Amino acid sequence: MASPAGEARGFVAAANPRTPADAVRVIFLGPPGAGKGTQAARLASHLALPKIGTGEMLRTAIARNTPLGQQVHPFMETGNLVPDHLLLALVRERIAEPDCDRGFVLDGFPRTLTQARGLEEMSGDPRAWVVFDFEVPRAELMLRLSGRRWCPSCQATFHLLNDPPKKPDLCDLCGTTLVQREDDHESVVALRLQQYDERTFPLIEYYRTRARMVPIDGHRPMDVVFKELLEAVEVRA
Ligand code: AP5
Image 1 (cartoon, rainbow, N blue to C red):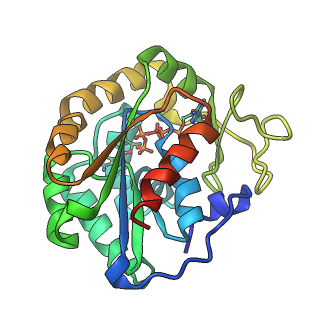
Image 2 (image 1 turned 180 degrees about the horizontal axis):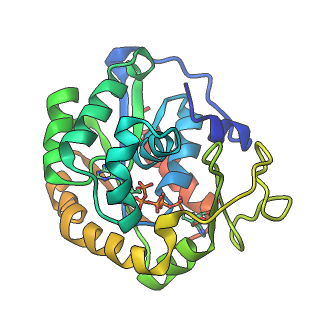
């Protein structure tokens, strides 16, 4: 099942059936606002693979007020990472679903060395995995996060200037009023960036020798970035 938000925004899904032996696994690394979610949705839709966005899954749990949602909300609203054991359990359960047999696109996971090691226990040798490492200047990240608008109903993402909805403040897909994510406020963003630097940045070095690492200059138009991603995965897909 490809990302519903991706499909509904007109991204073309590939008619490309794969077997478990050809499974494609893609990881998106990068700081908050680098464009991981935007591009992961497009890529998953194009490859007809599920997109597993841990931030999205956690926001859904919060919106539904599930026990997991109640547990993670205090971490997310303050910009802290959610404890590893919760993320590992969430992802383990998700990738055991049959639609992941042919591969998956991970957005926002792993984010710590413990999570990276846990993923290998679940999913095997990472040598054939594609790891995109998005780089975007800090000033641009701040502009993207402050201008991001998000649909609390279907989780589609827009930007006031870079990717505006067709009707002001309304989701193109479901018509829900768009909001600013609570962790996109300036005071919270500072801590998210710090968490990225301290806990996620070391994964770049970790994967450099273990997987197929592809550095991406994310400070370019969305379509240009997407074309580069496609070129990188189609070598393997
Ligand atoms: P998560 O939802 O994963 O947030 P994030 O990683 O901080 O990333 P963002 O969603 O902020 O940014 P993005 O890179 O996806 O950018 P986007 O495409 O939206 O995590 C949220 C929280 O959940 C974490 O802080 C943590 O608490 C918890 N969590 C999640 N996973 C966890 C884990 N594994 N372990 C522990 N805790 C976890 O783009 C941003 C904006 O820019 C958009 O408005 C977009 O339209 C625009 N844009 C995108 N690309 C471009 C472009 N090329 N040019 C111009 N504008 C662009």
